[in-house]
Length: 154
Image (cartoon, rainbow, N blue to C red; front, side):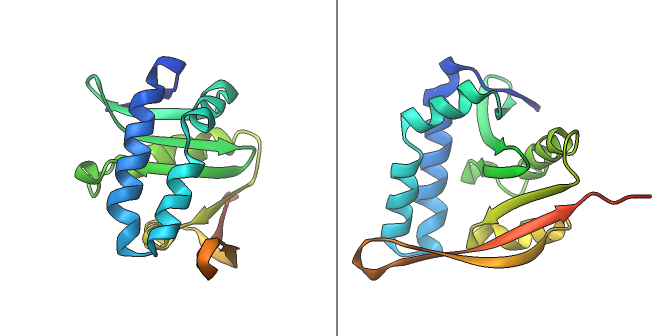
């Protein structure tokens, strides 16, 4: 498998990864409104903005895009792996690449962890430093963990 910088002609495949993952995994943890919010947030335009920033990458297995990751400064803004490819090290490979890129300029990596991702990030050395709540329609609240990982200095 290879992680590389995303280019515009990958936008449809990235959209597929994001929406398949959100629609499959998020309803197990959140109300429908939360999954709908994330699908709206990860629009085709938003994906193209991430690609143009140069901070979005994809994990490929042959010609198939199986995961994606994005960052802004020292903030990891998203890591998504197709449900059929989860628990196979894909998320870890994406995180390794994102963290290495961020650590070139920063001593701390920050991310907002969805409920299904918290344990994964804890196993990677992230600590919860806060809790976020985002209010959606119908009095639904999106709850997430604000997590960080500091560079280990020898």
